[in-house]
Image 1: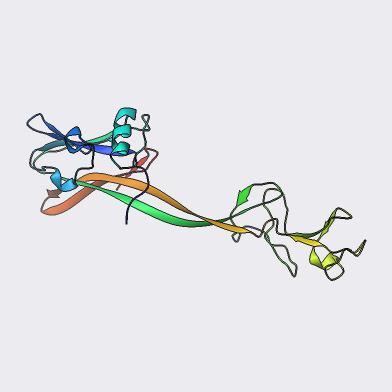
Image 2: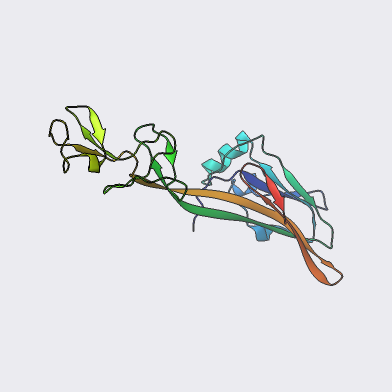
Length: 208
């Protein structure tokens, strides 16, 4: 699957001979380098860095969607001959369903915590303003639930009522986000031990 979520981090691998390998280097026309291009035998430091504005522009022009967020923290790991690099990026996709109240224009998710109007034409009750689907009389300017009407007619003027779906319309959207996982593995008393750092798009991280 093609990742269309803009990247916010790029890597630089630092070697014991004083050279470095950039993920998006000028030598590649700012196209992405493969992870397998990193020489683990020479590696002394590996870091994730936010794109600055100049690099982001060049990488975007080369066809990879990225964003420059300069205030994001950088992350670096130092290596020796006993440590081997672990690095990968995970792209998550979530389908979200939600409602928008036509009365207050606020968004809410319809779950077990949301009250439901008890009626033949039931609907969620907006947790922000208390609105729900109703039947509206344009002549009298009043609204009713179905059980208050005369079989769908206005109980006051007997005119036809318009059903308004104030809260029952459901929408959906796709949410995508990336996480960057860096770390190392090494043998400790004959056991392969891993230490991983998972970084989200806001720069927050957790150690596993």
